[in-house]
Amino acid sequence: MGSHSNQIDRIYPIAMFRTEAGKILRSQNGLTESDLNLILTYLARDKSKIVYDAETVKFKAVDETSSVLSTQDRTIASLKTLITDINMQVAMLSTRISTLSESAQKAINNSNRTSALAALRSKKLTETTLTQRSETLAQLEEVYGKIEQAADQFAIVRVMEASTGVLRNLHAQVGTIDKVEDVIEGLRDEMCKVDEIGGVIRTGAQRDSVIDEDAIDEELESLEKHANGRREEEGARQTQDTLAGIAAVRKIKETQQERKGETQELSSDDRALFPPIEQGICG
Image (cartoon, rainbow, N blue to C red; front, side, top):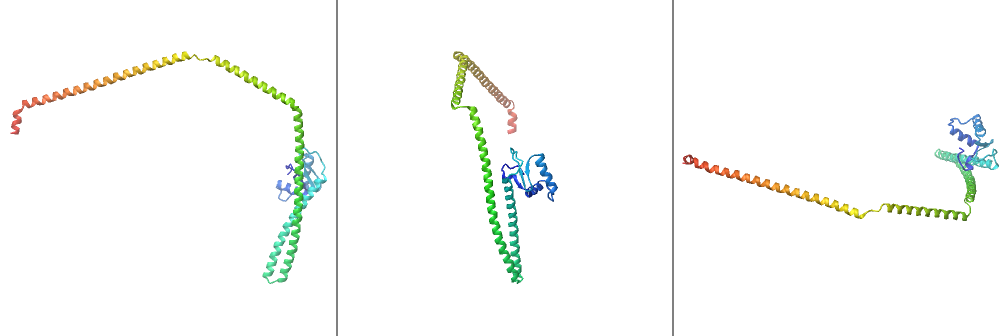
């Protein structure tokens, strides 16, 4: 309640305000007359949030200072009340039509033709009344919608008017087109100066960091010679290791051959020493 920016939504009939306030305060039995007067006095006098009378309550806008309800405010509240009442009538008429239809059906089931006809006549009259109330409700809601639309348009025009004033003041502070062009031209000049200074700084840095290519070539040649020397030393060491391995293998083979020759000689000598024994055994 009261948080809407739309003027129409900030206006309440007193009965609607009482119902909504009771819901917010979670009052099970609704607000009493004393409770309602206390809330209205507090919001109007102590908080300056509302303007009200015996029929209408209006929440003030943020920038609103008026303490009196206008004829427009009362008309909107009356329209809301009328729409609410007709909605209730439409609901009651719809319920009555359903009830009469059931009554007519029961009378037919009980073979009571007279009661059925009476119920159907009442139903037709109620349907006619419902149609009229529905048409009236539709017209009132259309009027209410137009008022809401007009209120929104009014708010939009006010915002546009205020925006126009803001733009006008800002343009006055900015000045004429010539002044803006002078500012832009001055900005371009200063930006060019920044680029020129940056170029000078980069040129000086490049001069300070000139590289001696001959020194680099000499250092590279020294590194290459050192690397080649290490590779040659590594190759020579590998060659020596390989030759040493080959010599060791040859030595092992020669030793094995010597041992094999000695074994063969020992076998021939043994046969020479014991031929009779062999012959005796064989014989």
